[in-house]
Image (cartoon, rainbow, N blue to C red; front, side, top):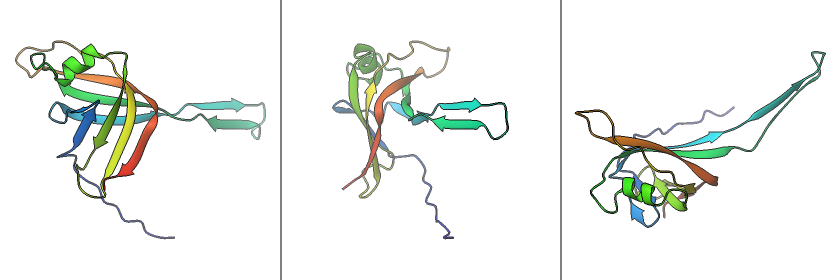
Length: 139
């Protein structure tokens, strides 16, 4: 059995594109999360059990600053384009050659508006992913 090395990284200097604009300055969290449903059937004997899984469905969670004054801010973009599908490109290690790039089509949802007093106003959204994110490598 081979020992597999690991190369974890810190999420910084990332790039997040939605549609035709870059929004990494607006976002503090990007999570692409799969959801896999399992179906199980159990008969009356210990050997009569069946389990299977469905193909995963994906969601993309974004935590963002609520910037309502900049015309093309991410908050305004999400509010204006809610319900539409847009291509998102996430580069967790920036534009380093060979680094992973994840591309997905998101169904946009509007962000929260408002929040707590004396704090930076933030919002989080969970957008549906059409299909699944596709991984490639930066040239």
